[in-house]
Length: 460
Picture 1 (cartoon, rainbow, N blue to C red):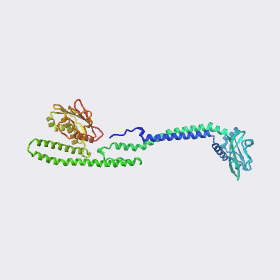
Picture 2 (tube, helix red, strand yellow):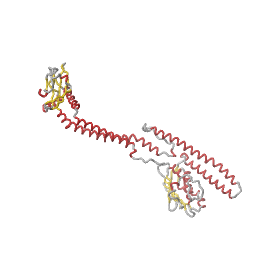
Picture 3 (cartoon, one colour):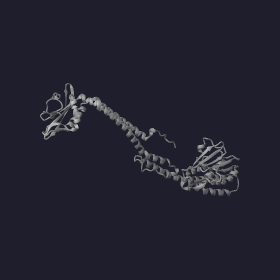
Picture 4 (cartoon, rainbow, N blue to C red):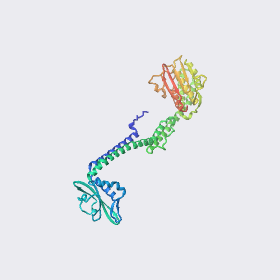
């Protein structure tokens, strides 16, 4: 089955982080544009708002004497009083009663002379010019002992712009830069690790799905800890596994049942043919029946080896099983004038964790295949260690293009002597997979070798 090639562009983490970076960049751009607009607009609203806030702040700190007249501000404002003395041309305040009489002021009356003599209660936010300099001012009422006083605060436009552009805005720009860096890196790192934690269940589900094979179709993906957005996909996958397992079981049962049901009719046909008078037709029919019987037996064996519950694992001596398989096929090898050599560690057992009968079938099929392809007068050599077994012949072998097909069902080599069903090597592969072993075919010069590798991680 071809797999779709994945790239980092298809990563969910990459797309989310890309969206995060784009959102951060757009936010920073909007903040910078807004700040730049405020700096360059010289908005009356901004200046008026600042003056009004400062006026109400001063009004809240106004102090009175025993007679109820304003005398100054509390100590917390003492460190700022010097600004009214030092910058008397640019900034000032005064306190008026309800008749607009001055009770307290930081400057002389000339500072406020351009202001119309209107009732203080009617002067909330106002603007005037003093010696051609625009001034922004505001009034804040103060209640004390039943009397109402009005604090007026004024500051020049050029001083406000100096403070904003020379001090406030540079600090604001540095703040924007610092905020941007924190947002990008600190929150970016948090987003990265959060994504890793959030996607961890998906990686675990993916790893679990990768381990499912025809021998573990009973397994299901765990949907308990996966994100709820992905849970329907996991449940759908589990449902598909249930249907697949059911179909696989039905197929295996049909294969085993069909093979078993065919054995009896073939035995009856063979018995009837053997009762016929000897002639060429009789021998040909017996050969056909023998071929069909072998196919049925191998189909039944293939169905059995495909089911994990048919195996009983124990510690067996692979050298002993190899000797038994060689002895079982000795008559076949003698008839083909092919020698069988079994070589392994001397006087030492080679224990493997395996199903003994299945291991015997695997070795028997490999040896039988080698004998069928080995030229007369040559050898079939079996070599084994505690972790590896090799069966090699010195026959014509197979071409490089045919090598990937060698374990395919019903595929047969062109140089074998009998008319086998083409299932022997498929059965070997099924047995190897059930044990967690690796069985591969390799071209030799000349001949072909089958290498069975034992791993520590599987049943064997």
